[in-house]
Image 1 (spheres, rainbow, N blue to C red):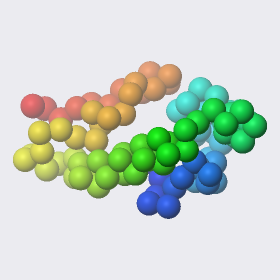
Image 2: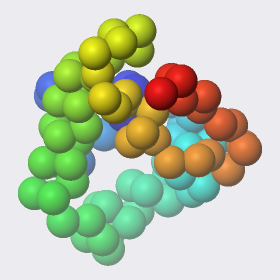
Image 3: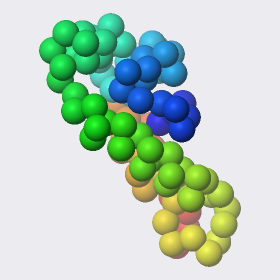
Image 4: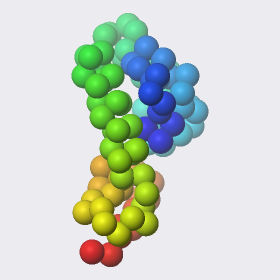
Length: 92
């Protein structure tokens, strides 16, 4: 959701992210996502949209990685990537 904006929804999600980034992060192609969304109606639109907004709210809330007063940070909400990319947590 690093690419998300307050107007990001299931309906326009494919226009807010590059295909290569989408594939790297999700493991499926953007074309496959569109088929799952538009042909098979695989996603619950309300759940998807609310999840996007919740993450964006967390990103705003926890976006200052160097704020020592925060008990958590945004990287707590990002799962390990298939690329073995690991986010280093703040020292606690």
